[in-house]
Length: 78
Image 1 (tube, rainbow, N blue to C red):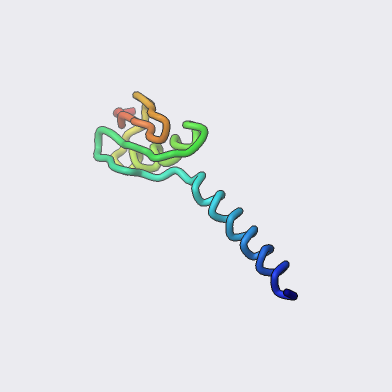
Image 2: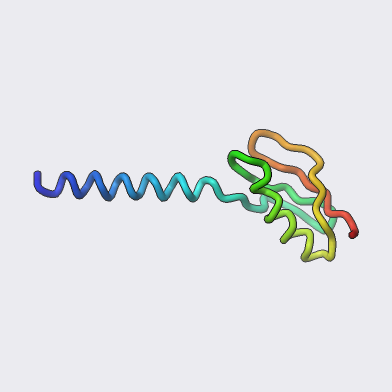
């Protein structure tokens, strides 16, 4: 019984960390002209990922469409 409170603490910390990890946006697919970014919550979280992806082709992102968990960007010439 002594280890039970510690176990709950560890489980609570682990659950909190999992929640933080889910908030991260990432590139689902893309090429020189487009990018599909998975996001959670605010679509603005997807913009830095789109900027990084499009910059690799010397382009800038433009938000085209969204769904509840995917932001669609066009990679336009500057």
